Length: 533
Image 1 (cartoon, helix red, strand yellow):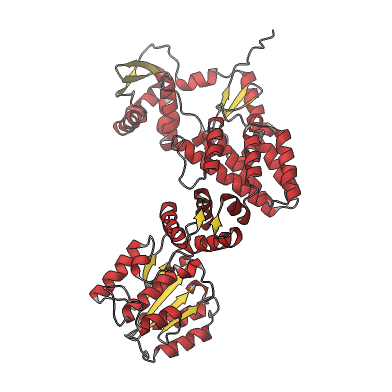
Image 2 (image 1 turned 120 degrees about the vertical axis):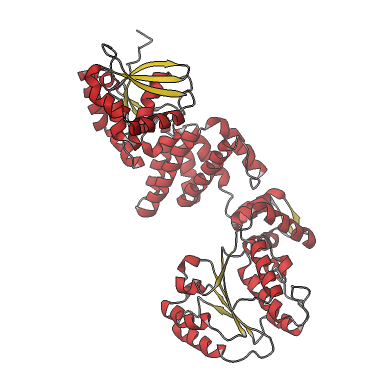
């Protein structure tokens, strides 16, 4: 007997064998039990997760002569013919090959004829999104009011390409990708049943490359078994899946993190000499960055799908990276990948991207608050603001008030502008007092209006738990300077000149262009003393 691939041998033949589609299975079983089987269904979802298999199971379940509860018996003539694809009453149509209006017109004519042996005549149209607009229009009426003995089951991997008029005439079921743990347990059962020796890390690699598709996973296992002689090893799996160069890519990333350009150039030369696709390298780097970022966010905990080698690799890298650095690295790698796809000289673009990546601390000191250029610090703009370090909780209350005004300006710029004409008066037992001098009465009157005051107070108390209460007072004769006056006086003519120079600096312009962002703020720093003087 000819060899039967695992993907066909272990294809589900009843509802209970379908993996991880419980919602769809339970709904269909209830419909059969209640006698409320619909005349048209639409199964959507990724490839290889059971859409067509479940369509066949439903076809057998409604036509089985000796059902086993709600499951088909798979022993009667009807079940066997449907399983073997020889039934006259269950017709499978490939939407990609029969996508024209003529094929659908022929289907409409055939629908009128009663079934030969089965109770229901079932039409399964796979990849239905491939039908032409004219074909969909021809199908509409038949799909809405088919004969009572006809059931349509449409399947597609691209539900968004199916017209709304078709969707409205079907019961739609969304199939999910199969998670790693479910797939591992299922594959483990099959391998043990088949007597195939396997390594855990090899199966993890297979599952990751199948992307939640059971059919792909079983097909990969077939291929590895054929190569390795009834055993699945980690080494063979990497080789057959084209991942044997991953160690080289991991070494590249490690040297990028350590900012070792000489070693990076050596590895790039080796990648080029081996003919490894640059886009594959960049996509693998993005995967590495993603894994590290998620591990950092989870306190160093890794996903189950990683191999032992990968866990050792990532564990060694975790102390060397921060979320800020990974975020910027992702932007550089992603942009390099985009440039390679759209421009000539991919080798040069790849080299430049990697050189830029291993020079992050010189281009952008991600460990600090921002770029420092000519004693002027340019804070990270809003496009990358979410990677900046949180402000210290020991920051002074007056500084917090100033920061709050900047936040308020995003929502109520007029109110924030008028409050900036006031000054920090006092902070006692959680109560912040803001004062206005006599010559600022206009701003005082504006901010003490009930509506404006309530908005400011409500937002301030939510801004920081340190603030418990808030008041605005008029302090006649006070010599304290308002915030807006402090800001202006803080800048000398030379400093304002430096600000202008910073805004026109080529590095700053390149930064803005590179990250498609704007400068949010510029902070003037004191010139550091030379320790040698």
